[in-house]
Length: 340
Length: 112
Image (tube, rainbow over all chains, first blue to last red):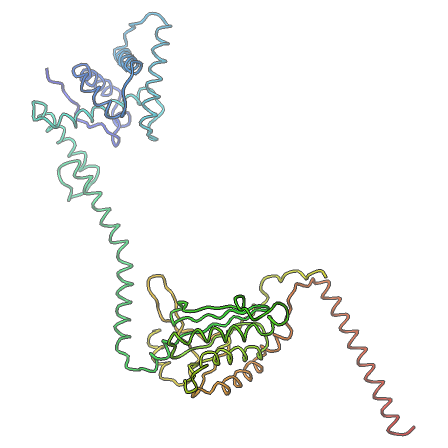
């Protein structure tokens, strides 16, 4: 006996309790009930796949009780005369529904008892249909009919002229479109930026002035002079450190006034001597420190002496002298005065 | 526009700009910036002359005066008022002393 399937395709988008009156709902429930009775094994297998675990006896009982409750609701027959039995069945059905809801975790599910069951039935039916697609049996005709209805639903919902006739392919098209949009959105900016850079580089390549190139590739010598310490760092034009030194490792200096007075000169001379082997051609001296100019002068001269020591005819590599000392305009609060 | 400005600045012999490396995340870009602080070019390797010029520039700019008046610790506003009053009294005392000395010198010179 062939089962007459409804023309409407019940899914998440078109739930039965929103679009169809209760009369059609009752008819639909009857048909689904018959379908379950005819093929129980397939349904169990599907349910296992959905849940991903073994089903226990309690679940089986609950399911059967839910079926029984459906008949009672639809046919309006008083099968059970005792009230206690009805209460027990209701409890089981409640557990069943709760479990289903917990598994599905669907926020859109309404709190009504009958409507929840409708959702469950529609999902299981969809799963059965998909599994039945595999063999080309008599059921294939039904699938064709269903596919037609699905096509109609897809077109109505998507309203897209380019959509293919299959429902699943419509989804694929939607995904592909979103991917295309994402790619274009994310990739356009870097490409524009890269093109700008390339154009600038091409423009830069044609510059015939060598002096600018010579000055641009000068190395930097940063001298940071603090109250009791001094740091000297040699870097290239890009800021990468080549050599660095400080007053701490120096052995000849001792603590107290001597260190603070001559730390800058000694450190600069040592670093200058070490930097002789780096092949520096042009150097920009950058001195930073809130101290008297006399000390800064001595530091610069010491570095030069250290660099040119040993070879009398060597050229002075210093091309620029900068004083980069800065003081904030009413900056952070100064530390508290020390209690002596 | 930055590249054009960079090329033009290279033409000028004495330019107030300096090429500073600027990391823009994707690649290293050369960007012109106003020179921070005092910058002196060493002409013909003569370091002494450059240092002298720098000293004059620093003194004229006032950085030396700021260094002398350096304040290392935080002072409360109430303490500032007290210090100001003390400085004022010291100033008045010195003026009075100067007047007295001036009067004494005048007397000696006149022979009174």
